[in-house]
Image (tube, rainbow, N blue to C red; front, side):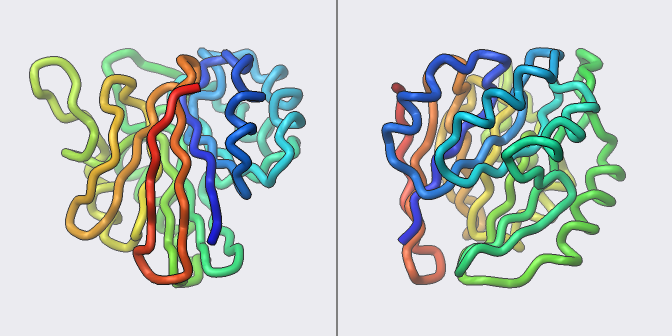
Amino acid sequence: MMKILLLTDLHGQYGKLGSFLELEPDLAFIAGDLTDMGPCEPVKEFLEEFNVPCFAIPGNCDPKEIVDTLEDSDAICLHGASMTIGNVTITGVGGSNPTPFKTPFELKEEEIEKVLSAAEAHATQNVHNILLCHAPPFETLDVIGDNVHVGSTTLREHMKKYSLVCCGHIHEAIGSIEVDGTKVVNPGPASQGCCALITLGDEYKDIEVELLKV
């Protein structure tokens, strides 16, 4: 059994980390937007505070140089990368598909395809295969306004390869749902104390998700 703390959309608000870590996870995932358009420097100090292995990707509100910051931090940057821990394989892609707001870390769908496919080429199929992404897959926890879907079509196409997708980006789309056999989780913005505690069992798709607020 493995317990994973999922955080996303911190937007530079790091004061609740102690409360998050009181949940006693084995690993931590950060699904992007560590900053609010920067700066990147405080991120390294924040990541030093984790007492468990931490895996992170950038969000659309992070400057492009956040990748270098993550690479040089105590966390493991999974943007365009894959890693295996026991019976879990985690593959990551950060940023988001284009938004109307021209935020710093946006990627065209073709760029998302290129980054994700390169990461998947090095991924090992496992009991639990997890996609850590900032943007949600299209038509999956991606509704804004008057029922408008803004998720990534590329992520939707790749989603079937995974038993679990951990995302964020859409603050109002908090939830844990299953789509075509894949569980998708958006814990909500950690800047407001939202998180998810995900428990992985020893068997395929033995996944429990608890949405929490500290």
